[in-house]
Length: 114
Length: 115
Image (cartoon, rainbow over all chains, first blue to last red; front, side, top):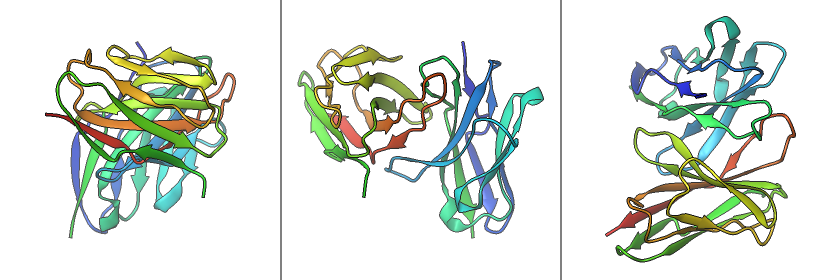
């Protein structure tokens, strides 16, 4: 079955440090890839998406992600984390021809130390 | 501003009662979705609708029902048949991209607690 894996349940980084959140998806043709962020008790907000073209994608709030087909990965990065980045991050994948429905990972909770 | 409105934000229910969660969007999106979120479980699709008067079951539809009588509205009923209804419920909508991926816009969620 198609799936998305976020290996890290919880990550803590210091403010100003760099961040990388991992995401791996099961093999499938034409994956469309997303990262969403969720603040406590809120809905999800789209950070960035990859459909095609340049494999390094820029998003909002200074985030970027790189699609690596050979590793089936779509890791999210930020060079310098701010306290306001503390939230839960979800990776999602959709495969062309699947009615466009997204499959979500279980999320990675990010804590930021002062 | 366009967006998705979910109500109520918090809802308490006694066992055996049906409850209905409201979801309204003014984005002129064709597709609407309901997800359930439990701690550490990510988002699981309950129902989705790609067009008015039509909807499909998602991965965990048992114990839930929906209707789509208007493009703007997609209410979810949590019935007494749902064994463990306490959860955070998220509504989303998207444009339809045939053969492609749908970019979802989410509401702020409704938290249902069964007492």
